[in-house]
Length: 105
Image (cartoon, rainbow, N blue to C red; front, top):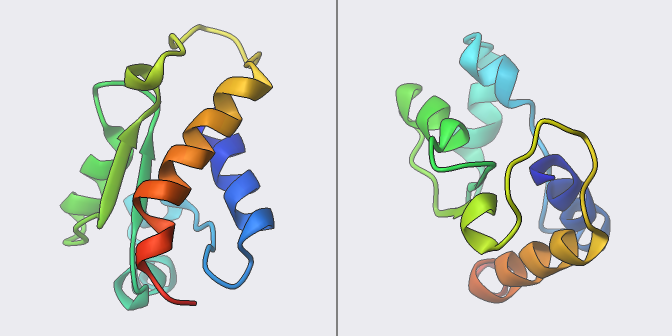
């Protein structure tokens, strides 16, 4: 669901949002780490309370500007790829309201 939220935000705000491969950051890709370090803001979308996205970023010296945990916003983490479109929009709206409006394009 976090991936779908990020995709939706990227499509809605192409001048403000850019997705970047977190696995590449975890693997130590200098190119990807530099993308995060040069960003005006870093939004970490974590699926559950383990906050793996935030943890991977911090391990590479990148402090998230804003963090959200999908499971704390209502939807339960399930062992499936199915998700509710309303939940995706709810989380995208939360990020937009609490984070994206603070940063210029």
